[in-house]
Length: 425
Image 1 (cartoon, rainbow, N blue to C red):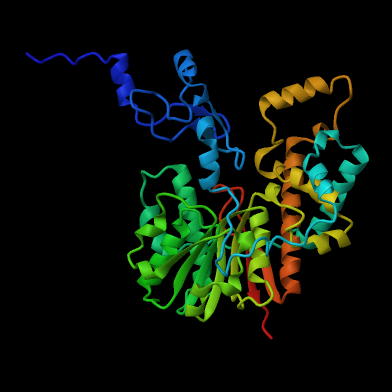
Image 2 (spheres, rainbow, N blue to C red):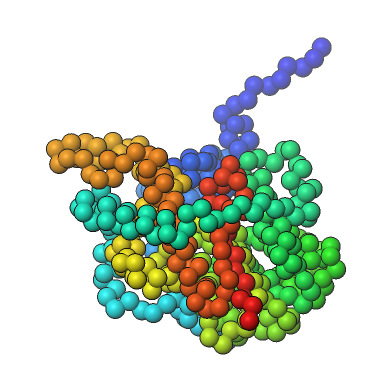
């Protein structure tokens, strides 16, 4: 006689949970941290009970003052501040120089704070539409119909891309990495005695496949140098067979004096690349590789994204924008509108409802008079105008620079890559 399957108890259900069941509204998914023993939640999301509050009032978790994206036990705050990755760290390393690539200090820092708090729906019609008109004029003159398709792939990623079990998110990153390596191969940059410097390397997925390609082609005198300010777990570059091909440097790009980096003395050429540089990090990278005294950079390949995180101080296209009548305040307005290109209004359903109710008596704000299609088009034009300022800066520094669509929009809406090579004398 077959034994009956025992019924699952609530205790068994809890024991079966391996990851935290807390729903993270900001990321629209469950927390991925390991759940505590006999609990549905991890330490960061465990709800405090009346008993625990009575035993220890300091069990409360608070946002970290250095980086509010994570929390810390209130009673351990003092110790956490000494080891937090977001803390300012004094360094004696020759290649770490505080704010060396940050750009010139602003004459009026208070103005930057005021501009950062701008709200598009609070702007006067005249100012709002004036900025849009100037952006559209620059786009029509310098950008429209100038970006070509360049969809390539690299053989190194054929096997992982063939795995049908991979989800959409995993495949997206693999397709992007394959396209970037395909461009390097197409432009004959996969050569020996070359340092491939990946800025904002993160967990090193692109670096891993690049190092694999170098190893496959026998380019043993080349290397991949990863630059990232964070110390991350589960790094993909740790799985590279030939460990000598990969060097990881922990540094903020804004503080990196690339001419003092000893690893680059081992090779004859430098190639700067990145798959994900948020906003200002792209400008910091361009300042870094173009800095006075830095070794010549033979090629630049940067997949562009997150223009809403650009900053006026670091932005390299200031002079070009100012010549077109767009200054610090207009730049702040543009960086508020760029998100329309990838997320519509950029507002949650609750926020839109609250704004609609607040403006019933005051009249419709200018942002609400635009259709969603118009907002997406304006946001896209804002992104490309900011990128055009970067191209103008590179050209002024002796580079032949252009933008390309390197993957289809179905893969990612952030599908534009910046390519630059020194102009031939």
